[in-house]
Image (cartoon, rainbow, N blue to C red; front, side, top):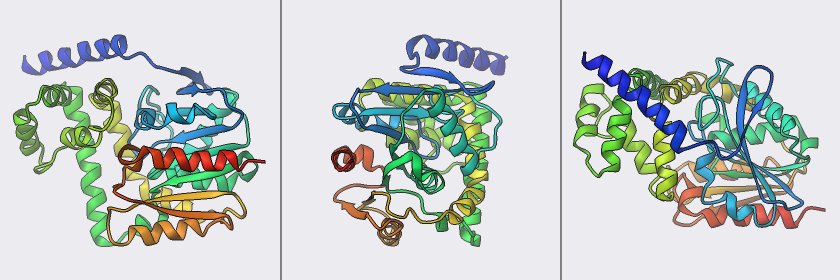
Length: 324
């Protein structure tokens, strides 16, 4: 009885989300499946934004409208995230890059493009620029994931990845029954009691998934936060995340095979706050191009686009004004 009620609660919630938060862009067919893409601005330069491993186009909301003042900017959602429907295609770097190219081509996004990627999305954009240099005018990497972080795996990182994948799969079960939605609504009303109880029951420790999600998006406007929470109430978001995590070593192995960027203009933004080795890894990324520029962003953590969005906007602007 309780299970049926919770499933009905989730089903009604999904219907409400579809009504309250329609896609701001367009769903583009790419051969039997579709991806959501949004266009803003009308400037002569083309900018494409790629979100982190389990993030969506919403993560760029402090950045995209400002870039749209001097360029035409496109943000999109990978399958299973944001407004893009889930599909069972491989969630491995090269496959994701080809899927991105399909939607950009179908949406008639001009080339060459300035591409901007955060975290895992940064690794994807670095690979894209390496694989298809004729399509890329410049690259901005925002505290990008580096391939050596997750391949090869040592025993500690193997345990971390296995645990994260397990929790993501547990999130599928919880979301299907409306439990994640209920917890996130509780957080929105200012109560952490129910999420804390669920954290203990799910084995996620003191900081459970809903709390992590809410903690990362507090710098976004309230309406955007509600949309992110709606997306993360869905089982498909957790299913997609679990597949990304399970395939992360393979994605990093593919990235290691990509050549350098030659003379492609490159700006690497590194968080000032982070683990001891991060700035060194980011500085190494800047050396992938003969025209690499390494910048540490003061006061920023890994989510530079939320902590210090102006740093991202300025980096993109610098590449735009340098275009021939």
